[in-house]
Image 1 (tube, helix red, strand yellow):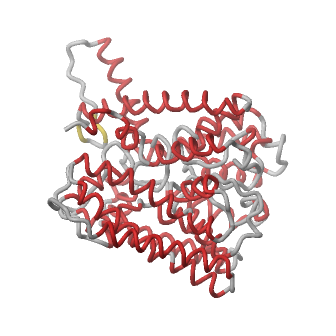
Image 2 (image 1 turned 90 degrees about the vertical axis):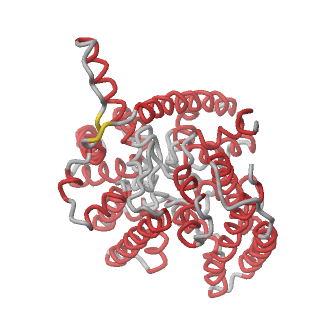
Length: 482
């Protein structure tokens, strides 16, 4: 173990977080929000002092192994979430540390769950920080550190592999730092375009800014208590947001390929095709179920179905309607989409579509082997043979995801919730989606949960964002054994 290097990376991360706090601090200064200003200043001081101390810890070497990378990513996300909660507590906006931690984790993991019932009364700087958190977490806070602070040497590759979503992260340039800079260029470009389109849709600059953060990061934290219900009549705004969520749920490496004019390679991508097929079929099924029952006009029906399918499948969590009141069939489709997620290499959470591609081809191969036991039938994705390790990893992920979901549901059911609400709460947090059904529906909050359940759900969010193995590995004896 190389604790000195772990401490230095965590220290640099806290220094970066302290510097970023200057942005919401400036907003609170502009709007003369004294309590928020004091909260941000105190949080910056705590982060800065601890960050300076940790970043100067003596290190044995600059080399990081997988074990150190796992520890950095897990501690980085947990500590960053804890310190991100400090402005909420110190400003008095969310006095309870457990509630503040839940809100910060929800932001950074781009989950979008909330304990806040009255968001409009909060200081603007605090609301901005809350929304800015999921933009920061959308691409990964350690990936951001790699892009801005290229001081990790060969360890950067290990951190990139551990933090990046999906069974096999894309690194489309030889150097990790160059890859992260390309990813952030795409991310910033998407954000700028989304802000411009939201302004055209009639939102103020402030609203456009925070809504773009939530859309591009597929985060979903709203600045209004009713999410986007009040904007439901604005068809252009709804379509801009829906398309933004869909595009953000696609593997960002495909946009790099488009820039390199590899159009055929993008069009043949198995994950992209399945992603779009699932999305379109879901919209069609829900539209047929809602038309004439909930909405009279076909256009309004398709608009609402498209938005909610895009929001749930990309794990964003925005809502233009209380879909918990929709017919059982539509709610069932949305519930199943909570276990799908977006593409690997996107800002979306969930299981990821690529795992369904691999699992589907694995099942197809088993059918073929039943008929032809001696035939060599490798699993290929996009024309390339998939290694047995990747296939085994996908199947292991499914089993672990199911086990965590079942165990989490049993623990949350101790709250006295009905079973569907408990399942929904676990699925919504583990999949980084945000709202669910029943007690955690789109017009409800998580405020009524006990402190134990809030902490549990917070760690389910972190577990989902880090794709289970990374966080759970710390609780295995083998991780700490030399």
